[in-house]
View 1 (tube, helix red, strand yellow):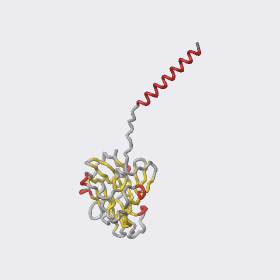
View 2 (cartoon, rainbow, N blue to C red):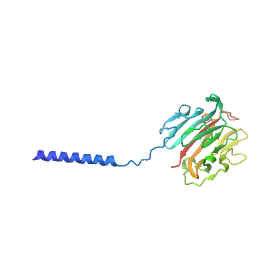
View 3 (cartoon, one colour):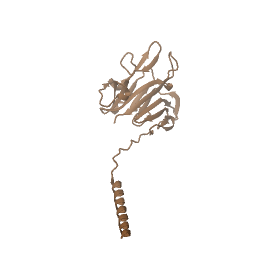
Length: 223
């Protein structure tokens, strides 16, 4: 009698177990898959854009920390008649925050390799540029931003801009806690800050340093 009871109990347990597994298999996965960008970077990982970029003329590194990406020593070069990158720096460096990668030309946003230091978005493709005087980490999509006329922002010199120029030392430094925001089709899309325009984020001298433009940028998508 006890033996029969044990067999029945075992059969019942197996049945419950199979039923439970079946229910688990039927549970729908509601996790939103990560966007497959052209350059994928794992959390905590740093990649060399000269190796992984889809463009042939890009230099710099890209690190991911959570949802924040850190682009360092970013620059691009002109393309020769043979289709290969030259050693001559391009006049503008183009990048796509969504794709974590540089673009060949006329990308969503361009960073000038000239003393104008202009940062400009591609307004014809629905992008616009805004800013807010608030620390990058504290900026949210619900903040009130100020639109940059024409989608181009330069030196904070003769007009309002994102970069300060010291006429006595000829050193340029980003305006402290001035966060820039890219809008796409009228909606806040990415926030970013430029930390430095000098290689390795350090001016080579206290007077008229020439190791520019190597953009150091942090960016994060609004979700």
